[in-house]
Length: 529
Image (cartoon, rainbow, N blue to C red; front, side, top):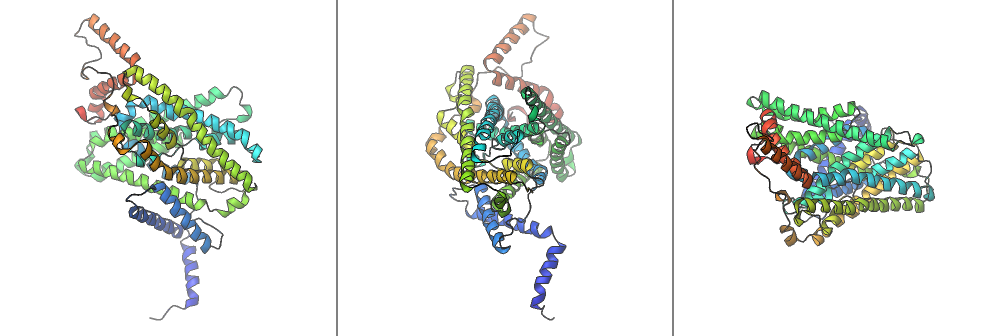
């Protein structure tokens, strides 16, 4: 066999790239993903950086290599499209968050989580929107509309709590872990729902529209949650009624994955929030459907959903690292370095202030209501815990990137200098907050919560007022009217004094009596919700 002439090799490579225009970049990106996993494994022991930081660094290095290979023309293997993120990458991340959530802790702290994740987002959005509206024109960033400023508020109010959650230990600090995890997921969902509501707002006719924004938000929140609950229950019922596991565990797993994805796509089809829908679909599936499949399928689904989520998150942060070196966007920006630094600094400052403006006041409110309801100081959020909750929400991640691309680009491309400036602003803030705040997370938590102290951490799941037997009926026809009235008065008193625990108690009774016989689920004291 003769040798291939050397001068034909470049021609062969060009033909290969031409014939496989999409295959080559995808292959390269997958290779970089594999490299990221290998490096992460090698750095596992005593690592001070988490997976997000590692992916950004690897992406940054890959971007530098690409710039050198292409002689400064491009740092990208793939072009980011916000539709790629919202349709393919985001669903597994959010679904896994709902599927893996410790429901008992989540619902015991539900009101506090909703305070942080919903009311807190509104406060943060208000501060960041007003602050940027006031500061940006002074820094020569002109041309942004009122809707753009509202979008900026939602973009930079979306948190990424992965760094903190990787340091906290769920068994040692259950209350703190539950609050950070729950607020992180609800925060992302609220930010996206609010972003979608802002997109439908005509800012030029803003007078009297505040309540319409709140109404649109509530409509999206309730309907999206309802769709997720219905899909989760339908999946559980199908699995229980048809007993898929008798013939194939593959069908069980496939049905759960496809139904979860279907719930997300239906929400997007009806202009609802896919994030909320797939999150609550995950919660319902883990509470009912998971118990209707075989033991093999239970183990497999846990690992499959976690793997899909991990790959999607790594993919996004790799891209962020590469996009930081996008020369074209930097050239498009027409502001001086001084003004750009002022904008970056202003955004970081507004994020710090917006976060502090709700974490500490709402923590005080939560402490007041919790201690009044339970007379138990152990259920309160200490000042050290408040600092960690504040710090956990300072990092910005995948959702911020996706919302920024959706607002300021068209299919990942922009030719407008102002829009290009906002994209680079977002990337810099994500990089700075993830790298700087992420690096400092582990030493901060070790300082505030020494290992010996965290071992003594309270278990909030056992706190709360003593309840009577869960098997007692709501009302009994066999008892006298006076007994029923007395029980109703006692229940109303408990509801006023400790609403979360009382609602949880009645939900457990309703769940045991009506829901589990139909949809399946844990038996007796196995329940986590």
